[in-house]
Image 1 (tube, helix red, strand yellow):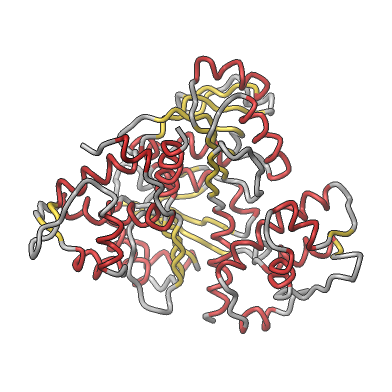
Image 2 (cartoon, one colour):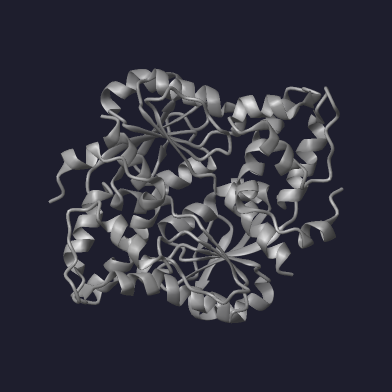
Length: 215
Length: 215
């Protein structure tokens, strides 16, 4: 088991945090194929990341590779899942249960990564009181009150861009300390609030541009 | 109008491409509020990006700010939308019409950003032949054949991680030159194939870790 006290004290560089899930994806594959050991050189070849960088990244985990043998695949998979927090259940609410918000509420894959969406919130009277799958949609005005039962640690922000900041303010006011921001707006928040930006439309711009370049 | 020949010749740095949608989000807001002009200093304060960086990023566009007045908000909004390719229609297919894939097929927001999902493909006999919204789901074996009518420029990859590479191979074999990879797997492709990685689960790991740190 990973020592959770150690995790909390170590500030992990963001690039490491972005690479660890790649390693997890690859070693999960190997584990499913009953491969027993993997070296950082092998991972390096497969993922196009420098082998010494991989060794450094994995040094944050409580696992040691053996000379000439490498890492135990099954153990490495388990350690990565634990370390990345995918095995713990994190309650979340979706703010803005429109197209993208409802889509995420429908994505059963997220629960496999430790995300437990317990409710959606919206301003649209037509969807307030309905359900997306099994998940109820409430009036955004009830966010703070409902938080007593929701115990959400994370708010997923999928509102129209012109409501991004005010919705974020509501979230913070309700005492939720982490915002997964899917809007392209750079929201402002106190330093103790964690913000992760996933601007999927920005990635589209990247694809379009790179496509045009290669023509 | 932006000169599309210029766009194709200029290789934009990725960080610039990531910031441009932030500017767009902000100036769209201003435009809706009928604000007429905005300076890079103002954008800088709002988005926490260096003003000289903003001026540099915007220099890729066919727009000039005026001294002491700044940029025309409406024109800047239009130029950014054009430049980012959000106004052109790009046909796309979803490979893996499971939970995340179906979620994206249900997200009507994507079409506002120029993405036109025309079909989904899967291996699961239970969903082959069904529709997600109005979008048909076909057998993945028909990908190449269907491409004659689909004319997809982009394949959205939302398959389980152990099928990432083989699905990517099918996509490339079908002649599709851009892959929007939602799997955590680093797929390999020839140099003329554009790959954009949106690993939403990696962002979850980032949130969990940062939350643990601040406890």
